Image 1: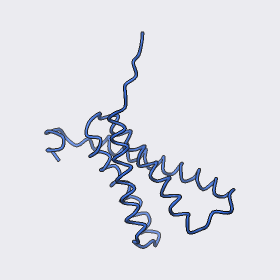
Image 2 (image 1 turned 30 degrees about the vertical axis):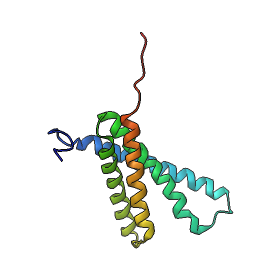
Image 3 (image 1 turned 180 degrees about the vertical axis):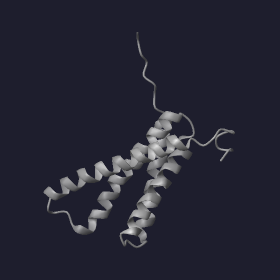
Image 4 (image 1 turned 120 degrees about the vertical axis):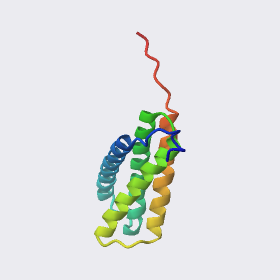
Length: 133
């Protein structure tokens, strides 16, 4: 990975903190979506995984945004790494509960990677606030 970071070490600590933030945001968004859906009884059960996938995408975006805003460079690569870490965690958790690998699993991978990269790009391009003393 030295080619991507010009000889610098991969910032593992920041990446893991960002992945933890992403997992926490995913949990909060999933709880919020579940609470809203519990009040709306017209949502079909078959739509639930896709609705939860939207909440998971928000978590991947937030985690990658944090990582890239701290490091301030290589947002696309860092977002990709964050999305991949989240996907692996969600995949292991799903497989441990008896879930099988389906087309939805591949869709999760694509969504995590895309929203991770988008969050990384947004985090790098974040404008700094001008502070007037």
